[in-house]
Length: 132
Figure 1 (cartoon, helix red, strand yellow):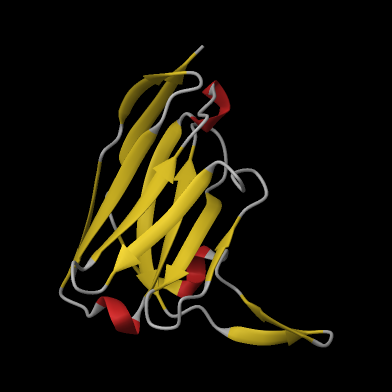
Figure 2: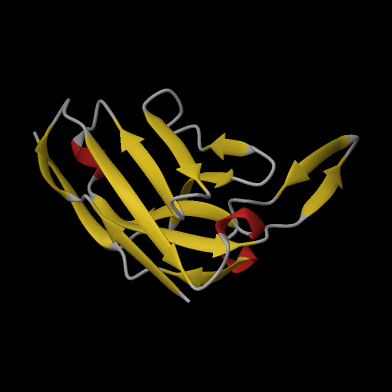
């Protein structure tokens, strides 16, 4: 199983980047793909996830409205379009494959996509740097 991120780099504040996560060794329609990032000295932060199989997706509040996740099982690739980048977005970005569990929180069915332990396979990550 291999997940390979690409598309990172250096961009000015306000700019855009599109990350790709190429997945091999597992069928994309049987796994959810999550995007995470980690800045030096900080904990790993969940950004977004997508399930190509059932179309479910979600975003962290910190990126909602700026980032868009997409994917196609025919390509076995998931994308993260990042717009309106700011220096606080500087981090190493990772994609991961797993089957995050669902559970009821009160009366609401919630998928625990934001928990790193719900993912079985991880890419090596790619650096995104945003200059002010």
